[in-house]
Figure 1 (cartoon, rainbow, N blue to C red):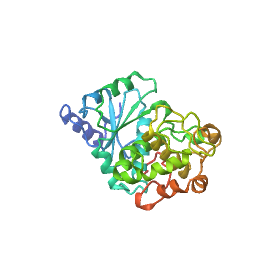
Figure 2 (cartoon, rainbow, N blue to C red; figure 1 turned 180 degrees about the vertical axis):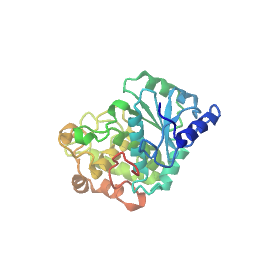
Figure 3 (cartoon, rainbow, N blue to C red; figure 1 turned 90 degrees about the vertical axis):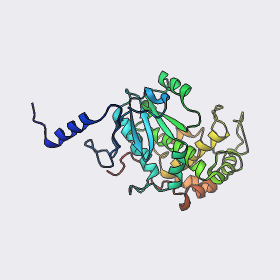
Length: 287
């Protein structure tokens, strides 16, 4: 048996001295695994609905909760992606404090379960506090370095959703508010070829955003629209086979196509005053 190093002995002693139910703070230094963030046990959930989750990672105060069967590497990858969306220049400071404050004010969170069909998902949303802003993400769809494998990493979508839906929409309601009349709503109407509160039976010819999920209301359509536009600007939708897969919903899959085909949303999402990300997260925050 190998002898314990002095550092390991100290760690063991510290853990042993921790009071029952006490959470340790998320590390602000690189962990032994090479990740900037550390996984914590979910000992003191903020609401009874979160009791079923075994672990979490804290990202600038926004927590990502995960079930025990979610792979640690997937959870850490999600944390790194979220951090890179919020601190895109990776200097340790959130790029847009107003957006982070909106996220915190609305108790934004992310939950991770194994699959879309997980019974844990339905159980959670039945009990979740309705006034809190949440987003779900699945282990099966979280694919680090997915583009190199010809697959899309859904963490790039779902984690952006929580940032825009619970962050930008509240921080800049007249611009990014998920309601009729906001600046992004006006751009949405242009992209869809008209003002549709519900998904139309058929979109007008010439529309470039044709999302047809009937469960997605007008505000949801705005969330999806920002996701498609920003990730296309950042290069996430431009790899072999991707355009053919998404063209039934979105046709401007590159930065050049968005700039030329939808200058209104391009201008909004690249305006420095809003501090949207300028580079695509790769899941390696401050490494």
